[in-house]
Image 1 (cartoon, rainbow, N blue to C red):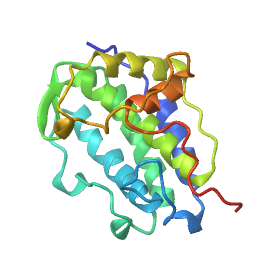
Image 2: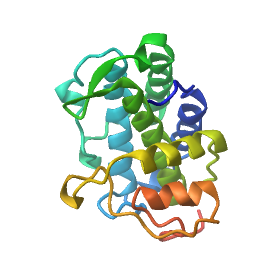
Image 3: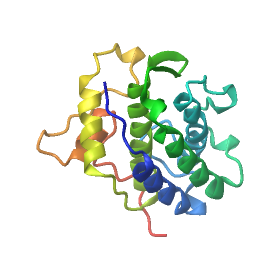
Image 4: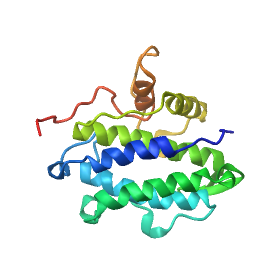
Length: 197
């Protein structure tokens, strides 16, 4: 069982990236081949509100179950998403959030595991959004190492049922962030269609 973690540093880090997204980058690619920047922002918008429900042991509202579609991204995303991310971190700071079971992705799950999946969403999507928009991203190494341990402890799942794309091979001596990104099926060397802004 994972120990409770403070999600505020990860939430603050991705909020800073959201605030720095250039207006002309919404159609740019991201390390997830199915997502453009606008799609990823819309997904972050949904999870930043929806995963608060998991902390309260409530089903995620249907309206927040979003796969990521830039066409649905509301105009005030730059101001609204950082506030929602702060609310998300506060929801998971409550002592009961990490205890017992909750519902995440429509299935019962240990609340401590759900909290780790929330941390994973914050750090991995923060890295993706930063990489796609040419911004620096800094996650706490302790959080990254804890996520690596957590993800490596999960039982193998059939590819069709997996939470991530198949892992990318990354040397064991690589920096922790690269190892985490590889574990979640992204290429840590991805640079995208970088251009001067």
